[in-house]
Image (cartoon, rainbow, N blue to C red; front, side):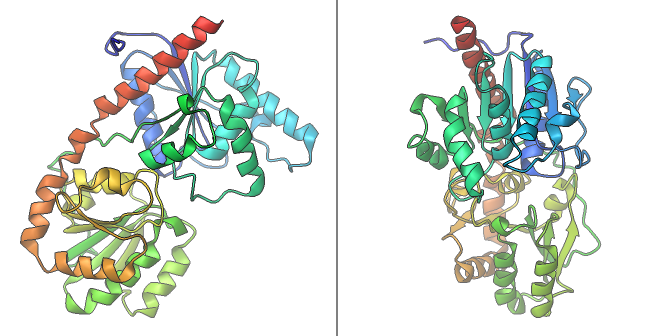
Length: 383
């Protein structure tokens, strides 16, 4: 079977929906998808459902920025059925007003809201994209129930990694599930910025300061080996609800002068390029964008081999090192090995940058375009 020629200019209308364009991996990757689709002559609109979060990322001029009707952004109680219907109908009208050929929704609760709005009776293909490992990411009972019931209404269910897709086939039709990893962008080699807080040598972690990112585990692992390498510092890039708890943990180890949390960096790559080692400490992931971006910067990496994501990215012993999930002692020992071996760091870092070829933006964009063309063609056949 000959695949469609994805280089041919098209004019289909694609509406991308997400909670916000605040700082985060899902938001950053939606932006890249929007920009890529627009570059292939799709008419792309981005709609956000949470007006209380300011845009952290700017959309390119080729992409339309939309806000839904105010009623679509209300947060009624579950038992307030009148308000729930008003919200659903407002979102439906807002989405249909864009006259989409395909709707692509990002993130679990947003996916559910979109399916509630246009999942039945409107002949609009809806692709829902899970942006974390849904098997481990906590949702309350109502959201879990709605996801189980509504995802079969989606035209396709996209996971970021292989393992969640395999598990999804137990609950939803096999032919509806697929996985498309994140694209890893080209990162200019000339971009280097050594921050004032850096030490002589530096470990970096990056992500939202939340429980699933496991920065408490990273801090404990660094504390276990910090006395052996007094010239090494740890920097954690990101912001989130666990900041105070992490700061208290750092203080308890007496490492406030060597562990730094400067907040979210819109362009973290210059800092990554100036680092010596990257550690990825997540308890669970769908893909691990920060890990892939660090590798693209030529950094040697260590990662917990959590249930999905890192094992799809890191080739253990070739371009990085994997540690059993949650094993703080093992992480500390592996960090100690790399902190003390500059030649091993150099060897791993040189190969790590090849991640950009395996997850090249054009390659990933073509996967999305093939999926869009497939579902839109099927929908046209059914109308």
